[in-house]
Length: 80
Image (cartoon, rainbow, N blue to C red; front, side, top):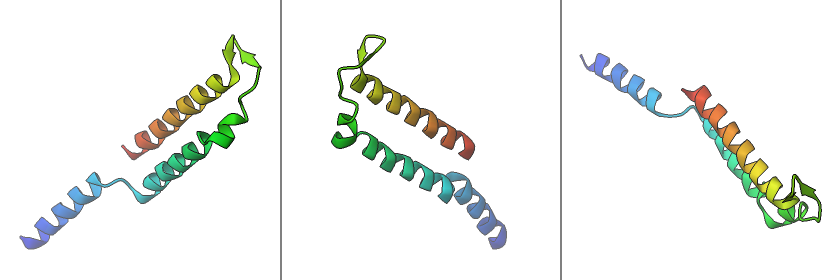
């Protein structure tokens, strides 16, 4: 009886905790986002050029944001 309870608790515990490699990927994504949104890197795209009438800095910020959301979605979907 105790053995079945322990196995059940282990199964529940494993299903509720994200795998370490997925956690590590999300942490790396967060660190990458901090670097991408840091002022020195963002200022590299602060120029007079425009993309479809929008300033390059704005296009860069929204593109990085959108790409990070897609990467996080892929990582989380693999977890499920």
